[in-house]
Image (cartoon, rainbow, N blue to C red; front, top):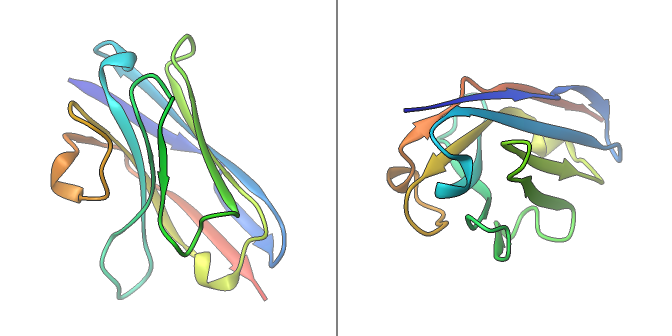
Amino acid sequence: QVQLVESGGGLVQAGGSLRLSCAASGRTFSFYAMGWFRQAPGKEREFVSSISKSGGNTYYADSVRGRFTISRDNAKNTAYLQMNSLKPEDTAVYYCAAGRGIPTDRIRDYDYWGQGTQVTVSS
C-alpha cells in the first residue's frame, strides 16, 4: 500500500504560479512511477504529467507542456508539480497517483491515488 497526500493548491490569478507536492508513505517511493491528473467540474479526469521511477523521464499533456514541470525527490518520498503561467482553464482538482509500471497517461495504469488538491485560477 502507498498513501499519497497532495498539498499546495489554492487560489491564484491568471499568469501566476503554484507548486503542488505529493507526499508518499508506505512502500518504497522509488518503486513507483508518479503521475499528476486533474478533474474540472463536469469533466472527466485527465492526464497532466508523469515521471519515471528515477525521475529521468518526464511526460506532459500538450495543454501544459512548457508551463508545468514535474519532478520528484526519492529521498524525501515526494513528487512535485511546478505550475507557471496559470490559466483559468487550469482550474481543477489535481490528483497525484503512483503506478508500478512505466509512467503513462492512462488512469488505469496507476494503482494508488491521493485525495486531490483544489487549484483555482481567476481571470
